[in-house]
Length: 119
Image 1 (cartoon, helix red, strand yellow):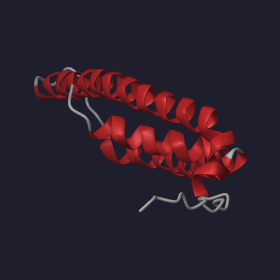
Image 2: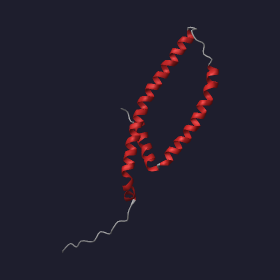
Image 3: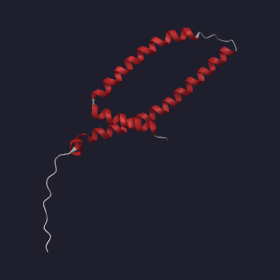
Image 4: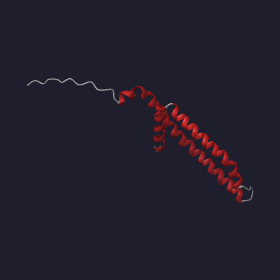
């Protein structure tokens, strides 16, 4: 009995074939997102330490009656700026994410992965 070879039917272009032109953009986006997340974590940690130390210093100065802090006035001054910055920041973030969708999706995935990893 001889084995006959059956021809393999041609495959339809699938999902991976459709992604092939986007792979460089996706991989660069994921790599840059990952690196950005690591940088944000490092800088964020440093900034939070500085803010915490400044708060402790202010509290110590207030405890020894060297300075008096009007926290309600500080809140009323800072709140409008923070609210406006948050609204503008959300609009900017949405505009950036929708500008280049494949890169932004890969960047976001890499960024989230970078935030979750422990180094």
